[in-house]
Amino acid sequence: MLCPACGSKDLRVLDSRPMLESNQIKRRRQCSDCEFRFSTIEIVDAGMPKIVKRSGSLAEFDVRKVRSGIMRAVEKRPLTMGQLENLIERIVQKINKMQVKHLRSEQVGYIIMEEMKDVDLVSMIRFASVYHAFQDAESFKVFIDNLVSSSEMN
Ligand SMILES: [Zn+2]
Image (tube, rainbow, N blue to C red; front, side, top):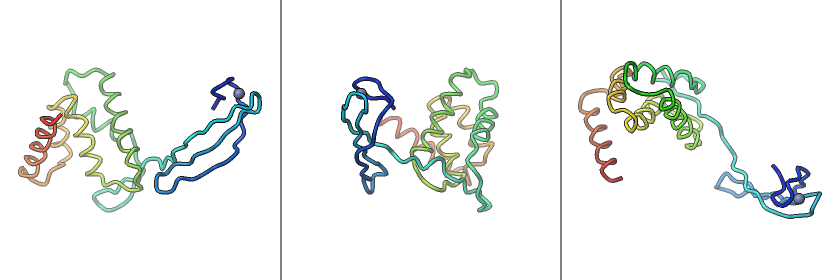
């Protein structure tokens, strides 16, 4: 972090105040070079959640698994590497923003599908079938209906 007034790196913390319930810490800082005072707000990052597998066991979140699942679904689809990298980035950010300790693997699947449907609907449907994301045809239909009604609202 640099002083917003003079660009110096030599900063002192005058005061730290945790803001309860918002995961934020407000700090009053002063530049040692030009004496300029300013406030910063830091957001505590809980990191990525542990993944609760269908068996009930826990696994570390692994972006390589997300990537390989997506790659399998988009095979031979007209998508660029750039689109895929952006897609993976959005998925990771969405999961990170949830700031939860645990996430079920099905929920990860839903998040992937939600993001995929905006990029390529065919890939999303393939992803759903490869990973048996739905118990039966009816729950798949409900999911698709929800997607359609949510994109109509936008
Ligand atoms: Zn300064």
